[in-house]
Length: 466
View 1 (cartoon, rainbow, N blue to C red):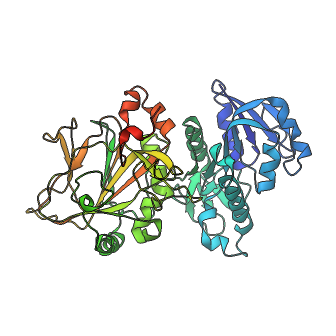
View 2 (cartoon, rainbow, N blue to C red; view 1 turned 90 degrees about the vertical axis):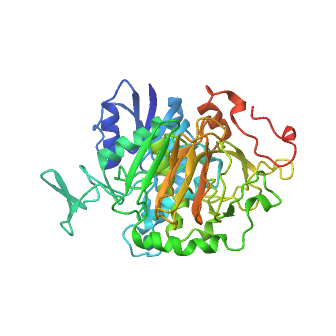
View 3 (tube, rainbow, N blue to C red; view 1 turned 135 degrees about the vertical axis):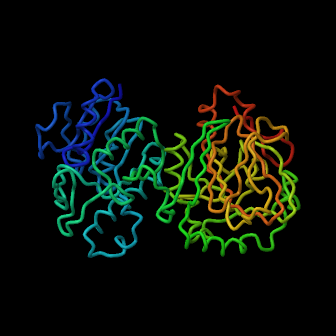
């Protein structure tokens, strides 16, 4: 049974969360902490009286021992957070922020009704992410939440639907709105999965990003390893823009095998893409939309470290080598929402650069674009293999334009490039996870022998996975 402290809990979002959690008494022991002024007798559960604006009046939190989870619905500035944390013992903290912290139209307009709210939440996020708190606090960004007990007075209910009072327009679950009970359920799911970092919870069960095509089609497979194929990913204008931009990524780049830091004889051109080059549709590969989608679909925890790159093969190209992608790699850490591989060798460069952060590849992505899709085009796809031996692939993901392949990297994620008779273009990227997390996730699959030492120099001089 989880011991959960809810801070706030009397207005719409917090109230619904407590109501739903109390309906599951076998799973949760609920405490509520607030001033006990608004709806003081609303719930029958343990109550802690605090005023988070006063350090002195938060001391009562210390009397109740350690909480497994804290869910904070009523924090509006970093001082309120500090006052609570000074007297609180907890294992994991979920702080409810807002999607407005990413909306420049709000943050740059002091007359906007949400300006002060969004500014306060952004201040809290920055406070968390620049301190050790980032390791124990998960920031949750909801969009507009609608439903019963709406204290903002923006909505009214008619029949089974909710409407905006000012426009009379019906409100649906989408990327910008979520029904309060749906938010509660998704939040509890993230709590059960012990989600890390910053997450965005929207009303969409399946929307990857705002520029997706309305003809999008997703297929999910679990054999021989977990992978997803998404067709018609971007809308037509975004896809065309991305095709027009791609040649500049690979222009003037040598084939990988000819680079001094090469660790294989891979003949394709690989151009690492820094975050500032990810404009237009390419911003998708460094977005919370994509990260949240991946973490939900694969039930995995990833970090802020990403490695997007453009891959190009001149014809005729030969087959690549079969591999798993399960590698230790290095990043120079920076205080940003996402961190690319600038400033370090992407290999394990422990000896030459001991200050790099070590992570392990956990999710691979391949997005195919601007390729010849005529019947005369042969190859260019991604083969999936039963073993590391270059035998006949058991499955081939064809390089259909505007197709995204996502797969989990694990003990048997054997795959490789299939040679083509046409110029083949692809965006390849990876999400990464903490080494300790990946070892625990795959502890039944063979321990340290599972991870490949993708390193420069003598591998025996590099750190042991244990």
